[in-house]
Image 1 (tube, one colour):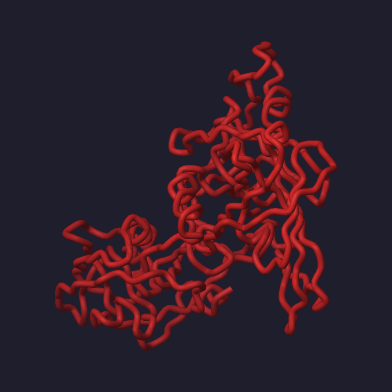
Image 2 (cartoon, rainbow, N blue to C red):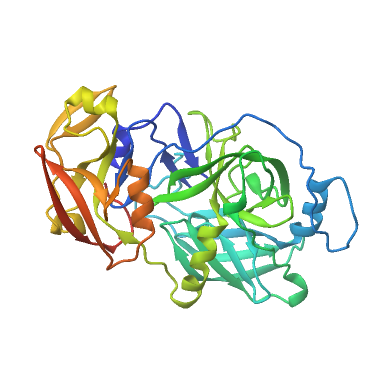
Length: 402
């Protein structure tokens, strides 16, 4: 957790199923092109799964969850990661100290092709000296090679050398087509209980959560399907039996480490766009601007007498980063607003490439839609005066040290 996020934490904690993160509500914090915020549309409507699911047997059934489990269950993997002993104390997904002697971490994943490629979360296999996989209900264990990993979106691609009859690839759907209230199913290995199935709905869309390395993951799917530690890396499946997300985090309500009905899945559209890079390069490059900041609202503008009531106020600038090289300046004077520390006097970004900037989330979306080396033209307000600066985006570092 970054220093800034500790200052801006919300009343509830959001715990990774393999790392700790705190959600930020209201005042929005972003570091180096990444953001943690609470946005999107929520619902409390509960609905049974009634849509059809494609069945390999061709048989029809009104029990869709049962059919999804029969169709997709064999494609879900049980993953064990042998952790190296640590020289200093580290922390588990829920803030519990991990033993310095190392140990075994468990998680989930799912097969995506006949070549033995398996998708999971990066935090499931990060730091592991050895990764093994069990497929379906088989007790046979296969050694897994880590083909590539992206800490920025918490995705990892594994490969196992397993017989063709043991590989049951799941179909990847389109997360962009999901709507709030749509039914979903999660299959995984919570608390080591292999091939557990739960169901629920899409509770919200367009969430932004924080990856274990401190950067943001956008377009995240929120669900009330029960997911718990060990579900990490497992599939979130739509009513047609297609994977539309990778289960990654849960909100814990501030106490304990169990599910309270709020889970988050990395959208499969994001994952799909990275698979080829993971196969060929072993990593994914993300654009990086190198600032932290907050959304300017009319209320905030009035409270601290800002010259504009819309945009992003810069809170800090990474030394030597793209924004720093472009001359963007951060605030210096601290003030407490609604119990949160805010730095005053920083540049306010009001436009990007000629388009009005309304929020930090929007800025993150823009950065994530570009590649390292791309140039952005920013309109900023400094001491009441407008000016335009050009920023050449860099490559996101391994972690956000904010």
